[in-house]
Structures are given as C-alpha cells and as structure tokens.
Length: 252
Image (tube, rainbow, N blue to C red; front, side, top):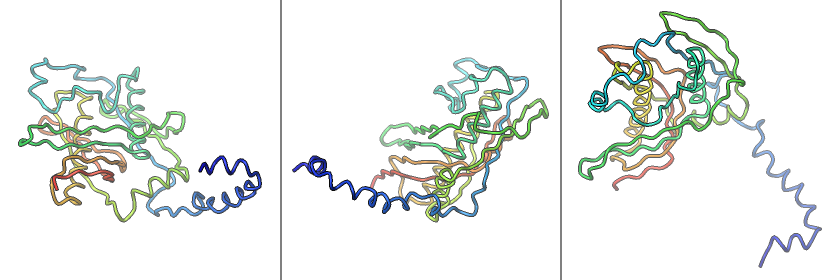
C-alpha cells in the first residue's frame, strides 16, 4: 500500500503538519544546546611563512628523496603554491589551521603488516574550509625573517555545537609529536605536522583498543596552533587535539 499517495488523496491530513513541526522543532533549537564552558566565543590562530626561503622547493635529487621515507610524493596537506607571496602563503597557513580547529579532518589509517606484506597508509583531509572573508586579521609582522599573521574567527552557535561534541566525556584531549627531515625546506614542516596527526591517532588507538587494528576511520579536531621547532637537522611538530574513531576493524 502506498501511504504517501493515500495522504495526498486526503487533504484533511495536512492540518497535522504544523503540530508535527512544533513537536520536533525544540530538538534542533540552539537555545537547548548545552555548550561546554571550555569553548570560547572566538578562536585566534596564526600562520607563518619565511620572507625569503633559504632552501628552494624541490631541493635534493630523486635518489636523495627516495632515501628519506618522510618525503611525501602526494598532494601536500597545506598547499602554499596557491599564494603569490609570503603574506598570502602565511594566510593560507593560518586559514588551514583555523579550519582544522573548527571543521577538523577526516582520516583513514591502515597500519602496516610484515606478515601480510602491506605498508602503512594514513590519509587525511579537511572536512571544510574557512574563507578568508570570514576572518579578521588582528596582527601581523616579521621576526627573524619569518612573517606571521594572526587571525580570529567568531564562533556561531552551530560551530559551538560541533566543537562541544569533541569535548564530551567519551573523548579526551591528547597530544603527539611528529618529525621530518630539515633538508625539505619550509614546506617540509607540514610533513612533521602530518606525522604528528598520525601519531595522535595512534595515541588514541592505544588508549581505546586492546589489539592492533586493521583499519581506523574517524575525525580529528585540532586544538590551537601546532608548535614547531628545529633540532639535530629535523623539524619537530607538537600538537594537541581530539580523535573520534568512527569505524574500527580489528583482527578479532
């Protein structure tokens, strides 16, 4: 029996629609959303880029790059090539970090296995992007040949609701560190950033899972700015964030 066609043959049923909408409307009302007190009214982050790159893009021969497994041949996580100068590249950096704080990332992690002769893979991309017209520039300047721009974004009720989900009792704020070879130049910093995000997933997997997984899919929400430093010829990236494991496949 086609219930839909039956309703349209009986117009008198339409008087119920306003009452149905009134019944369900409070479920979606922002007035009833319980926000975490830790969530601020605005998020302020910064992006940076050197005024003069000391190591040019593409440094090193192909053989040199093959000898360094940290070098990624895939699409970069932060595509600085879209910026015409260091100011635009720094803004690209800041907008990416801001988007990671608001929308977060989708990720797919597959650990490697010597027994099954499979290599580890970690795929990650932003769930959404904040446009430059939606932010306000609050500070900018050059220090030690690096240009930094600080931007802020006012949180809407819907954004607060999304972030509140990551502040629930089921998820815990974790921290992780990643590294990469310094010879890659400034763009190589994001390799350390990429590795830090991967390690953040591993930290949460070890906390929640009792056995090694075959596959993990989920979300990552960044907390604040990642911190970078250089030592012993390597970039180091330290960051904090929440990991929400949506799908887990194990050997069990």
